[in-house]
Length: 399
Ligand code: NDP
Ligand code: MG
Image (cartoon, rainbow, N blue to C red; front, side):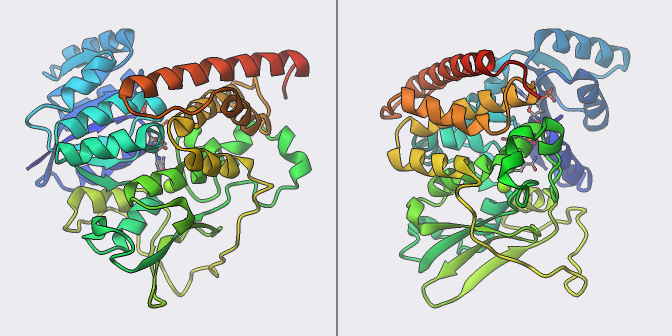
């Protein structure tokens, strides 16, 4: 039995992970489930999977969960606070950690899993964007295993030989072709961008995801974060990665080789495929995802992204080229701006403006310690908040 900890169990990735685990009760045992505050959903998950530990970061939610579990006679131990996230990933019974907390809140627990030498299934791309070098160093130094859950990176991983860490040049890779759907506003006239509402932005045409990543997909900051993620995961230069728009989300990414071959991974846009792949790797298990019907499939299109339409892509590329804490700053400013947009304090087009402003205000420093990364993350959030406040005063009410 493989012991599994699911960080962010109540989110989209967490729920999909539990769905795959549910199909294989003889292979996987849930040891830990964590969430921020959705205690009712967590109670139901505890009832079904009977984990040894449940962590609610929010203390009051932990109390409520504990009460429910007691009345149901469950012996799951309830913990609270973010330190508890770091503690539970180190448990000896935990073999695999699904890192599926959204945003910077997932950083410390993911790093702790690396330090504990666990097999990490990485959905929380923000941790790599914030601290790529430190994170990859810890994975190597503590002999952890890192498997990408992000569908594109999982596809790239599947299209590479297992010894890709030798170096992409050595294995004959000439390019990574990172695909993206272009989000819900790929064809919307740019003059209408400022009026886009959060409800429209979170309605992704192909994927069903949490709110933050859905907004990131609409601005294509998600693809920018994924570009950075791919550089770290596959130890490559940004110039070796091309972003290709593929509105049907059937090809999940491709790898081009020097001999003229392009290898692609195809499948339904359903996260249970990469989750099942990473959980079972190097084996394969059933995921619950239906097969593609190649004959009934729509025509597959591939087009170049319009950089004017997606300024966040340019900002992410520039931040990676700058290096150091620039990507930490990019990520923090984006998280603050996306939340402000969801709270209707900011227009859609102001998300990229906030990120650009914060990157201009704070100079990049070497990201040589976790303390520096955390400090720069906090600093960027303060500057982003200031920009949003000034912007709100100037603009009056939004929407
Ligand atoms: P959701 O918003 O659906 O879920 C987020 C999870 O994180 C929830 O369990 C939530 O708990 C928990 N959480 C939120 N804030 C905190 C906090 N401060 N401390 C601890 N836990 C917290 O997100 P997704 O599942 O969509 O995404 C999770 C990660 O996976 C993101 O990094 C995203 O980029 C990545 N990803 C997602 C994909 C998708 O298809 N959804 C695809 C590829 C990557 P609660 O429910 O209690 O609030
Ligand atoms: Mg993705």
